Length: 269
Ligand SMILES: C[S@@+](CC[C@H](N)C(=O)[O-])C[C@H]1O[C@@H](n2cnc3c(N)ncnc32)[C@H](O)[C@@H]1O
Image 1 (cartoon, rainbow, N blue to C red):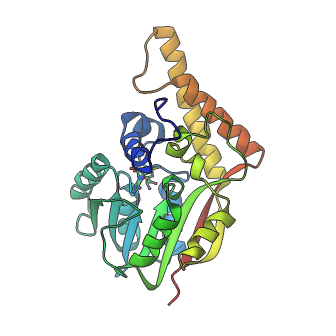
Image 2 (tube, rainbow, N blue to C red):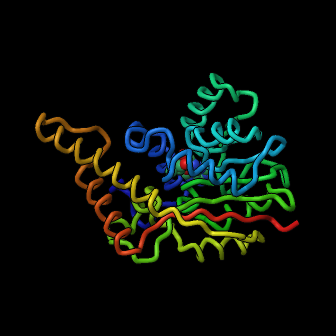
Image 3 (cartoon, helix red, strand yellow):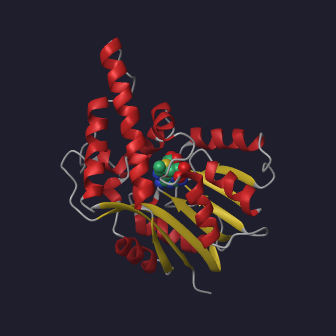
């Protein structure tokens, strides 16, 4: 990622981000669910949105599809997932086909900032730990509003940041690991209101983020010890830099500068 500069285009960042989030390293670090709180928090979001059979839901930046399948299984709703990464979409479709919810879920490739979907098609839109990655967040919010039917609900869970980033993260690296575009809940609210969406509630899940960071740090420390004692290098991962980032995240959480929240709301009827 060092080759990137401030001249790097939004499309380059998006492509790099899609590659990163379909890599084996991310799968190893985050396992099945690529957001704090895992599928338990996804289930909580489904409850806040009052999902049920008959609802048609869009999961924007659906990753490898775990959330979409879990919502279909738990609430009986239909879920379409969309993600920029073709590899993630292929993996999600493969898993879905072998699952018990194969008739309820489907996955397509597309960009959150210009969804290839018709107006007012969905009863609910969700987006987990991804909104802060989008270079043009107002465009993504406008797309969420466009594809929601009047009265439709949305749920966005994401990182909250209320401080300046250290220079090493205030870069494309920061964009890709999500922190550079993270807002305060008020910041997300403002973007969503600008798109005509109203936020009904903000729920805080900082402990879930703390647990995820601790788990990532433990894996990185374990990998560092193995790499040093066995003199091997892990492909595609600068362990020192990854550990520095995880350490910064833990410290920022302790200072109350980094957190995780879930915003729920609706498109006015
Ligand atoms: C942190 S992962 C979250 C995945 C999933 N929402 C979850 O919680 O498991 C971020 C995802 O956003 C996708 N992504 C990044 N930029 C995107 C964009 N502009 N449009 C759609 N998906 C995007 C990546 O490919 C990746 O799958």
